[in-house]
Length: 67
Image 1: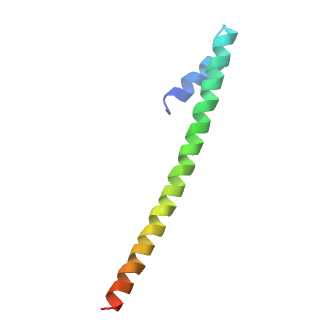
Image 2 (image 1 turned 180 degrees about the vertical axis):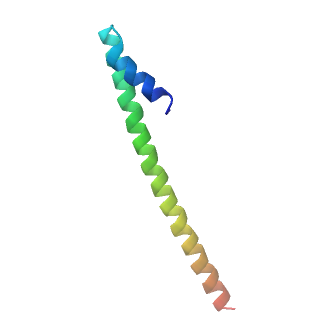
Image 3 (image 1 turned 120 degrees about the horizontal axis):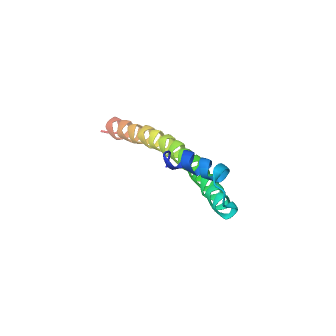
């Protein structure tokens, strides 16, 4: 995705055909939005993973303490 963004930006600004510029601009903004959303999902996944690890550790402690 990162390799497409610069090319789409250039196309959206420099191509003579207005329709092509418009399509390239829309594709560029869509990829930027997807990139941002993917970063947010990754951030949430990392937080969830950490919370899950903490819960698992607490469960193991409870199991050990009840023996």
